[in-house]
Length: 56
Image (cartoon, rainbow, N blue to C red; front, side, top):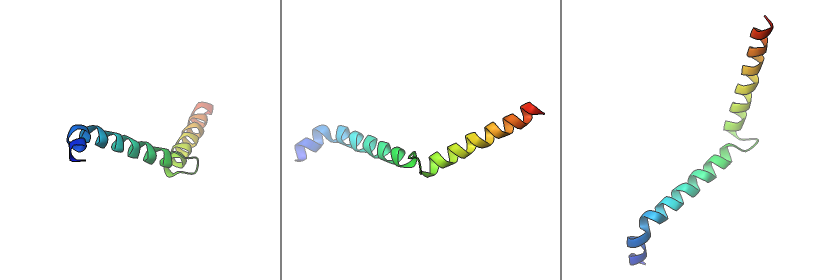
């Protein structure tokens, strides 16, 4: 086991880190997630403001 971690420790850590980032990103960007909601509100507010400025 020690030999495996000595040889492949960096690769194993990289895979675990990438999987963790993908999991966190997927969780945050779900349709009811915090980030998705914030981005959705941002786009709606921006498009509303652009429509008001454009119509003025």
